[in-house]
Length: 109
Image 1 (tube, one colour):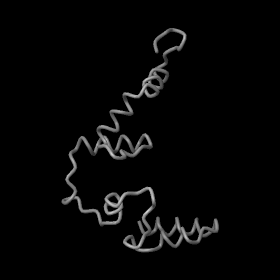
Image 2 (cartoon, one colour; image 1 turned 180 degrees about the horizontal axis):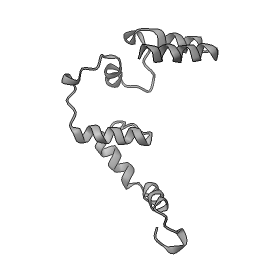
Image 3 (tube, one colour; image 1 turned 30 degrees about the vertical axis):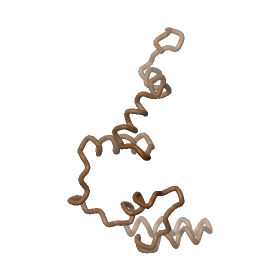
Image 4 (tube, one colour; image 1 turned 90 degrees about the horizontal axis):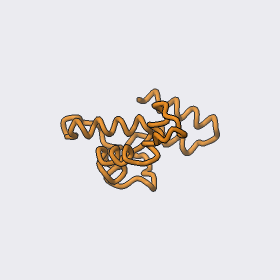
């Protein structure tokens, strides 16, 4: 990860974003918390990952992975609830029908 952070910092320095680049080079515990990140979420970001202390059911993990694949984060609800809300959304259902090859004129939607 350190190599990734250094590459990210070098790219930001090249763009002239020196403050952001310096943030990537700091130790995790000294990073600045973004304004849209809650205290609890921030504590989970900066603490070292310990799988034994992180008890998440497998279904929740899979839902979180699927949301990440779609480009979403769960927000205030659980990952399972967020994924179900996404699947129940009318736009999602229309997009799935279109991807399956349905013709809008045929009335399949």
